[in-house]
Length: 182
Image (cartoon, rainbow, N blue to C red):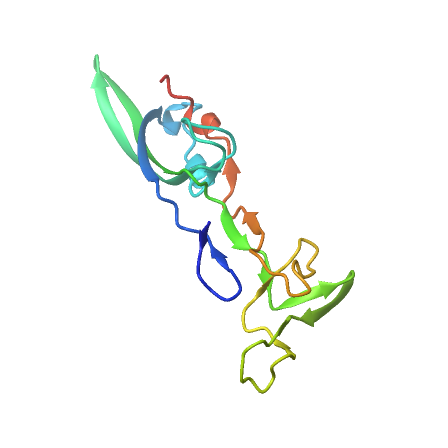
C-alpha cells in the first residue's frame, strides 16, 4: 500500500512491480484421429482463468492464462501421416496476485443492522468557514467496517480495510498444463 497525502489519510494500491510473461509449448493429438487428450473447448475454459493452487513456484492466484493459440500440423513419419496440434499457452505472473483490491469505503453507511442508509458527515474545522464546528456531508468516501457501519467515529480516522475480490475464474493449472519437470 502506498500512502497518498491528503486530509483523511487515504491509501491507494500501488501497481505491482513484477509482471512475467511465460509461453508454454504443448503438442497434442488431433481429436479427429481419436486422441482422448485433444479437447479444443479446454482453451475456452482456461483462458482468463487464474491458478487455484501453487504453480511454477508462484502462490495461488498469481498466474493468469492470457490466451491459448493452436495450429494444426501434419507430418509424415515412415509413410504414415500424423496429425497433431501445436499449442502455445501464454501465462502471466503477477507476484501480488490477480485479485481486485478495493478499499472498503463509502459515502453512506448502515447503522445498527438497520437496512436504511445514513449519509457520512464530517466535522468542518476549517477556519473562517461559515459552517465551522458543524457536521457537513463528506466530500470523500469514508472507511467502513465489514458490516457497513463507519469504521472510525468520534473524530478518529485511519486507512480503510482492503477487500480482495476475485473476478477471474479459478482452475487448477496442473490439471490442464501438467507440472514441469524442473
